[in-house]
Length: 447
Image (cartoon, rainbow, N blue to C red):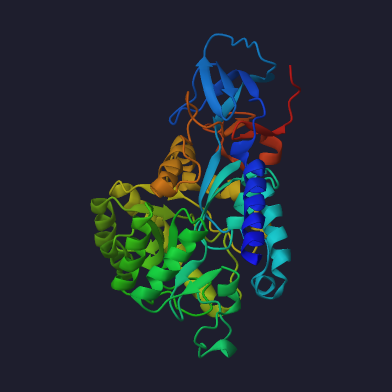
């Protein structure tokens, strides 16, 4: 009898899930027309054009006026710039707003609500997609996808996979030595997963994939904000990294690796990792290896400026200074060898700096032209997201304003190629924000 009741309960719950799912909804498709806009095409702005969006796709782009039979929302572009939504390739949805201490001590329901508030703020800054590189963002992603919470598309990694004493080991010293079969608090809530063998790495990778990870994040070297694991340390063996890479490949996706030093980066590449995050301390030979292997370089503009992550003690301040000192050289090497570069911010534990997400993008003109920066944060980052392949949660074309592409769009009050600082003040200069064909911000009066 209990089995029958249990089966009936599951049947009802599955039916309710199906009814509430976005795919099951049959609401009529919305129609939006952007009149008289200049489109950022990846290199320059076009002549004035008109753009038709139906449902969540761009259906037509025409120099001629577009008339619609359906009741359409019409947006008078007035010759302003229409560009793709921005993409942040290194984001931590759950680590932006709380302090490090609060993240470790507050009720996790509170941390989740902070993450939801930050997700909405992220979207309102024009970032319509983020690659989440560590944290329990699966539930928030589902809430955003179902329209319960407002936020960007999230490519989740789940828990960052680290070794004992590695960059992702957030345990208290009182929890050492580890008790067999007892997980620490950061592991239980899905912030991190500690592995010390290839079998461990394979199992924890599969656990993230089971929960919906679109890619896997490993920490294979020390970090700046690490409680342990100094910057110069090499973490996870090649065999451990390879076990995670193989498990991810079996699910049709890839591994991205946190690494700063040449040795850590080389180990990751040898094991089959497709993306290196950070890498500010690599030498020229390692940069050449990245180019030869087609490895992506997810770089962040870490500088000694107002956008720098503040470190709480002298040791981490010294590590941060070393990384910042290597940033110019990293971008120089990336340009010299034609390495595929992604833009990300990696903002941790500071909502005020997160509010300057667009300012970090503008900082990129230190090494690239404004048009190159805009392309990197749109079409190039979209190509990186597509590495998730069979685990891509949002199949379709992103990062461009083209017929057939998904309608993630920004209407900018001005020309961001001439003045990229416009994106540093999104509340003023982003007049319309559209994600997946839905207008989430519109400060213009509709026709």
